[in-house]
Image (tube, rainbow, N blue to C red; front, side, top):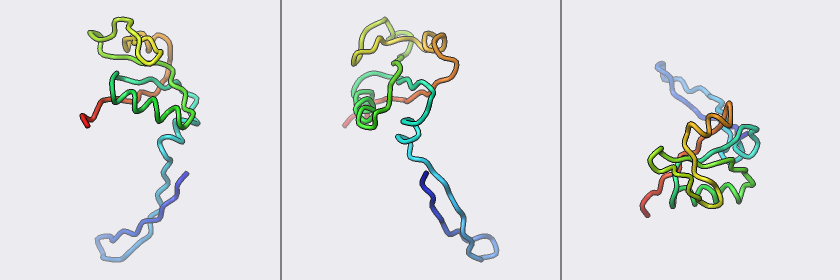
Length: 102
């Protein structure tokens, strides 16, 4: 957990401290018990997979839009439809994986 203290100026012009607690996304994903699935294939998904491997974050599956999910393989995962993922897991986390074009 990362704790930050920011200073804000209210309507009266008086400064006040505000404590903000934030958790690093990758640390949160590493510690979660929910399955993590990726939406998308290609460069963006490959980059996310690489980061997850670096943080020892387990990826439970990959899904794509229905017209692209034909049971093909991507990085060792069978590409599924969202409905397939929903049948497997009651709750899960979706990471959106789109290429940035650079």
